Every structure is written in C-alpha cells, then in structure tokens.
Length: 405
Image (cartoon, rainbow, N blue to C red; front, side, top):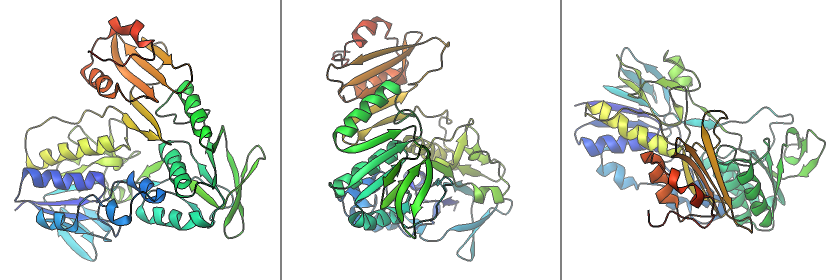
C-alpha cells in the first residue's frame, strides 16, 4: 500500500489529503499538525472574533469525516525532522515512512522589530489560539490599533468593531493607500473614505517608533511623534513561509521551498510542497485559491495520474472589506511602458469604483469596489483572455455591468 505523509493540516495540507482520498481509496495517509485543532479556514477567525460564529462552527470537517475517509491526523504533533534518502519523517518520538511526502507547513505571522516589544496584548492573528487571545483582550480595551492596512488588518478591525462597537480603532498603513496588493491609489482613497464613515480612523504613511507601556501596551508612538492610545494592538504585517524543516533536510530554499512545475522539490525522493510554503517560478502566493489549485495538482502527481502542471494562479479576491464589496483580479497595477491600458469609472457619490486593465485589447485585470454584479463575467473574460476592445467606451460608464454578453 502506498504511504503518503503530509506535514501541515491547513487548507493546502487538508485539501491534498482529501484530493488523494477522492482519487484513490487504498492509500495510507498520515497528516501531522502543529496545532491541537483540526483544519479550520483562517478567514473564519474573523467571524469568530466578531461573535458571528462559535468555535465549534469554525471547523471545516467533523471528526467523523476524518474517520470515514481514513485520514489519520496527528494533532499537536509537529514533525521534527525529514530524512529524504530514507524517505521517513520523525514526529512524536517515532519514525514514519512514506512513498511520497507533501510539505504544507504554511507560514507564520511576521512581527517586525519594534521598540518596546514584547508587551501584553500586542498580538498577531494567524491561528485559533491567536483569535482566542484577541477575544479575551477586546472587552478590557477602550482603544485598539491595527498595524497594517492589508486585507487581514482591515477585516480584523471590522471584527473587533462588530464585537465591541464603542471601541476606538485606528488602522496604521505604512504605504500611501490601503490594500496596496488589491487596489490602486484611487481605489484605496475611496475605500479609506468609506471605512472612516463607519468610525474607524486610518493613518497612511505611518511608521511605528515605539510600543509604549509597562507590562502591557498603553499607546503607540509614531515616528512623527504622534501618540495613539491603545490597550490592544494587532500586528498584521504579512507572513513568512515556514521553511525551517525543509532547510534542515537540505531542500532548496529561497523565500519558500522551491518547487518545479510539478510542485516537486526533490524528484528522486518524491517530496512535494504546496500552499504558503511553496515557491514556484520565484513567487510565493499566500492566497487560498493557489493552495487549493496546488493541492489538487499534487494529488494527481503523487498517484501518477495524468493532469496539467502548475502554471501559477491568477490573483483573485472577492470579499467584503469592512462590509464593502471588493473584487480584485489579475494585473491591477501594471508597469508603465509595456502596452497596458487602464480604464476607470466612478459613481458621482464616490461609493462605486471600477478599473479595467487591458493589453492588446484583452482584459487582464480589474478592480470592482462597491459593486458585485459583474464579478462572474469579468472573471471569465480574464481567464479566457477575451478581446473586449469594442467595449472600451462602455467600460467608462460606471453603470455598465456586462449584462447581455
């Protein structure tokens, strides 16, 4: 019987296990998890903090599902070592042999060096235990500061504001506008105005000088001298891939574990990497669609089934940011001088903003802020590489939603 070991029970690791089981009922699957919990979707931690769901509702599969599918998950059992030549891993004081190994160790929250750390109630949000610490801190806080104006930072701000409406929240963004990976400067400015309408302060071009307080945080001091009261600080400054285990096994490491188009990092010893830890073609993705796509490809590669190689993932985010509909797909901030064309449309009240990026008449990227109707059509057009040069004038009208196409 073929033996597969998967290191990590996150979305990439768990989806790999499920995909293998869906394809083959006779494979022995062992999954090793650092955490003491079964797989949960990380975006749902926001709803847990907001009080919209309870902890039991967080988990994607029931305990019975793992038993029924014969997927053995070793919770709270980190893998300590990989021996590629021997095709085995060490965990919990035992050795486990494999015919194929999948490294899905994910990433950890990055806490940049800041004067004054460590302090109580200065927290990241990456794990369920992080979320529990935030939930415990919110009732005692009158003011919270979010360091980082990306998706996670803004959604954490929303969750805390939902859980405690009277709390004062300030979002600090080092760049000149919010959501720099998903928006352009105009879209970022519109989003900022909408967020401030609901009572969250935003400071851009903000750099933290010091976390001030005794044992616990009391305020944030910025490099321009401004001080902001805070009994709770959430650091949302990005992630770093967990490459240490792979590095100790002498696998090729850059920002992540370097993989080829088959998502393989050691061909002779059948070791693969997926999810936030995998680096393909010089890029780590850090998004759920990439993890899902990679997991399904790796499952086929492991069992020897024909299928496409991995060629990258079209960046796509469709969600509500602070309750505001936002979609960002493909190339949204193209380099100058390479033949890209940008077409924008904005409603008179400034609550809807659309941007389309074309190259050679084809739609290659889009931002849709405050509107959802055209998401399906736009996504399809980008994936198909459709020529929409005949629609340029229509794209400049904010009410145009691709109906009838």
